[in-house]
Length: 269
Image (cartoon, rainbow, N blue to C red):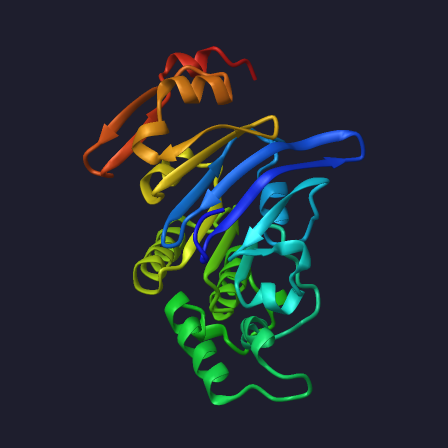
């Protein structure tokens, strides 16, 4: 089960009606690492994160959060330990940006009590760090998709959790803000020993920023391990059914995937 500060999935399966989406998955996440989950569309990546955060209960198996069964853990306690940034998080009510970020402090604020100085300082610090202070008083419904996503990201950082789950969290952002937030995430891992578990579609971005990669296919873990060990041409071919070249890139200081020009001519519009 690992040490007391681990998060683990033990022989977990999950189905939507009769369709099995997660099939006997066992994983152990160690503190202070950046994990990326990769795989084809519909392979179960988002479902796996929803199970890890307790939004879905597995049909069999269990999730263990710091030596406790997640299914027996209260929502408020979970919210103090795990934060999730989803690509599809919608806020339709016209809260201000500051109010949305403050929502990350709700697990720590007693019912019917106002935020304390620590909560306010945390919100101000995180807004500054993520570059959203300038529109703190704007309605979140007035923001662009990328700006809104940065606010949701800031809210998750305000939860001050040991575990940060990212479900395509950078999909609406330009590359500048993506790299900025990835840098913040790396800093959080280094300085606060947080653990990040992120779903990526961009294989090269995942390889460049992650310590460990988990490749999933048809709800099963095909291969998992250190990024440089499991990022291979065989893995890419097996997972995505495409031929590619995988090489270490000195500039990126990580393995990267390259697709040849012949791939373009093989696809008809």
